[in-house]
Image 1 (cartoon, rainbow, N blue to C red):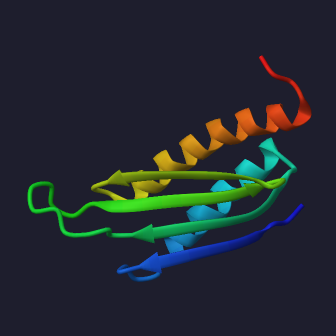
Image 2 (spheres, one colour):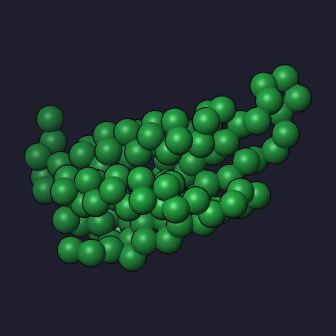
Length: 105
């Protein structure tokens, strides 16, 4: 099932490479659960960190059958922030999907 996907860039330029990566990762998440109703990915640079340099944030919001999943990750590389955020979303999605199906461990 194809879900509504929204990718938002804040204080960053739109990147076709990131859009492609995000679409592939969202498609992978949809294989783990057919209950995903919508998804929103926000990529931004929250504020200037004087000690850490540039830090990027990737935030993923999934609506899984009325149960929201929200994960975010900060990293000096936007690509690594996206990768780690999707890894966290995958873990939470598996937990939520098993709860919905009633397969609690």
